[in-house]
Length: 224
Image (cartoon, rainbow, N blue to C red; front, side):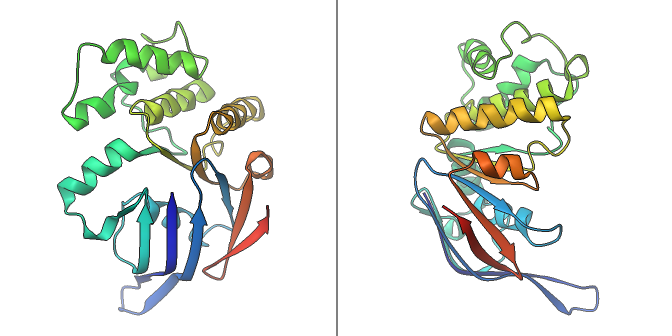
């Protein structure tokens, strides 16, 4: 599903000096795997997720996702690929406050240009899948933090992408809500979903089938 071969990424200081973030990182993620990526703040975890998600193509090395070399795509093709193939879940939810849960979940269909009359029913089914049946018409402000993250998860699943990328999905949640999200991600993995989760949460890493750690810009296997 994901193949990184000798991928390096650096940012530049204001004076032009390069600051390496990833250095010759190599990684293979199989279809149906649940990979946790850990490491201290600033180690490059989110940068790795941005590269895999096609949000940043400024790197060296080889990267394929779902059989597609992302760096060879123009902006429109890359957007179509992300919309169809990758679901994103972020720490800060990124829900539109003026849209109810159902409309937020159905946003990927709008951006794909393929919205249909059945999208509302599909969105409600996705909300039911994450335990939010009956809350489709609530605005984000009317939901708890854990519920908002589950709406974001339903949105990520709406297009049935083969790959789900999660950046600190429990980072803004209390202990109970975090446990609910971990349980949902574990259940999705049990249904065959491929997941890559960047996390500081040892309990999240324990749910994953494999864990790697970023150390000095390199990926180090922690445990099978």
